Structures are given as structure tokens and as C-alpha cells.
Amino acid sequence: MGRSQETFNKKEVKKKNEKKRKDKEQKRARKKSEGKSSFDDMIAYVDEYGKISATPPDPDKKITVDAESIELKITRNNPEVVPDFVRKGVVSFFNKSKGYGFIRDLESNQSVFVHTENLLEPVNENNVVTFEIGKGPKGPIAKKVKQYKD
Image (cartoon, rainbow, N blue to C red; front, side):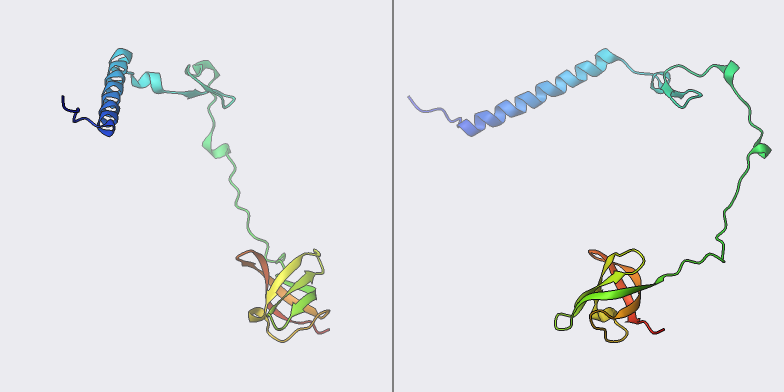
């Protein structure tokens, strides 16, 4: 008597395909039993309080709004109040050999990273400097750094 030509793997594949076929048949049967839904079944309404409901709003509660009564305002930037992007700070740490350091902002006490590429003139630790804050890959960085002169 010879061995069956079906291997375990072939049987598993056959079972999986059979299961898929049965699932598809069940889905088709469910769709037929549900029937076709109309567009009215899919509509949702919003009441006067902003809540979603299945019933349409009461036409007696409808409020008409005159278009001219709506006020539109455009806020313009006041040119007198221009933010100062140049900040003042103290170099708290600077390593010349590695080429980076940190500046402590005098206004916010924030520590800002500075690299030698962003220096306009050489600085040392405890120097008072002016700088601009820019966006770096890991957070804020100081740009256009130069020593502050009274």
C-alpha cells in the first residue's frame, strides 16, 4: 500500500482556502439578508446644541440670521509692537576644541546651544553676548552670536 501524495503543508493550504471560501459565502449571505440601505438611513442631523441625532431638526425652532448683521474683523499687526528677536545672554560653557557651548538667556534663564559656525566673533566663558534663537535638530540654537558692547 502506497503513501498518500498529500503532504501536511498541502492539507493546511487546502484548509485555509476552504475557510476563505466559507467566509466569503457568509459575507455575501449577510449582505443579502441586510438588504440595501437607503440614503435616508445614512443621514445624520445636528441639533441647535451641536449634538448629532438621527431625527431632523424641528422647523419651528429655525432661526434666520441676517448676513449683514455678522461682523467680520481682520486684525492687523501693529507695527509699533515689533518683537525684539535679538537676545542678550551669558556664555555659561564653551569648549573651543570641540566647537560648541551653551548660552544662558538673561530674560528667560533658558540654556541655548551654540556652535562655532554660528559665531560672528570669538567668545569665551562668562562673556555677555547678543544672539538670535533659531530652530536646530534637537531644540533651540543660538545664531549670529557676537559679544555685547555697551
